[in-house]
Length: 70
Image (tube, rainbow, N blue to C red; front, side):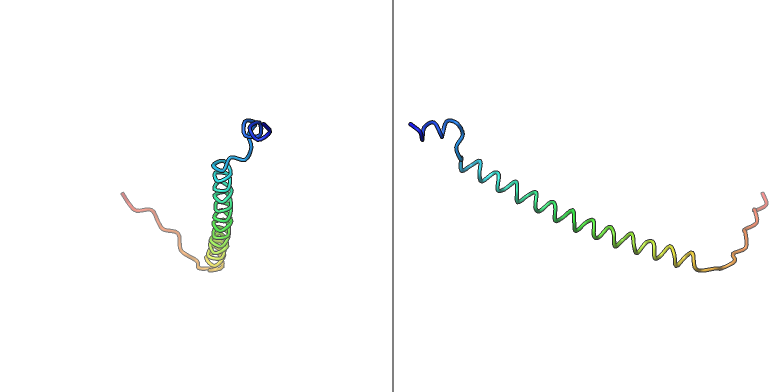
């Protein structure tokens, strides 16, 4: 009788446990992918800032273009 009640109340269903493990694995995979993408984004931002600082450090006097006669 106790086993029947335990099954009725919601004992450990193997399908439910398998689905839970699958979802936990998926969450771990997504978290690691998010971390990898954030690291890649940080590297790209650092490279862009470096590129911008290089462009800012170039001090070239470019004459202003004169308007074309129309």
